[in-house]
Image (cartoon, rainbow, N blue to C red; front, side, top):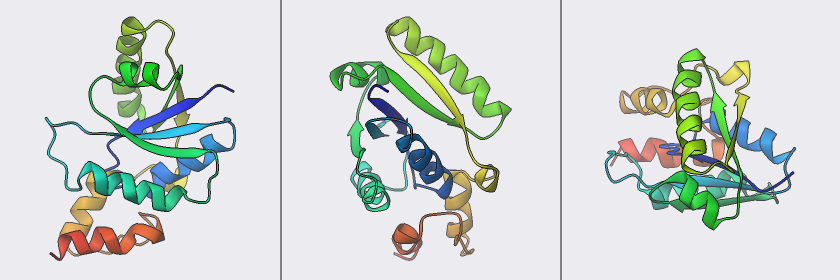
Length: 159
């Protein structure tokens, strides 16, 4: 299969994100996990921190590369010579938004295809926003985020 991109904000990376990354990496030749640096969005973690967390959790996946981008996803995909975008879905509400984005991306670049992958049932309830809320209120995020980055996330709220 061609080179593939899994884009997102990953603020922070969750077990749901990792589930998608691991499963996609098993069916494609090369996967770029691309962290969006969106200056219009207020992120808890810098794009450098998010990129580093993803590098830590994907280090044992030899066909996975972690990168970041600014601007339009389709322009980044063209630079990377990628024609397949993977989007993870948890619920119908995700599909509505992601379907609309897929149509816009295809309008901007007709060679771009978007493929959707459902998250595993174990992680359908997870989002980065929920992780931040629980961690920010001092709750236990074990099982919500990869063990390798758990302390990095918790420490962000203790500084």
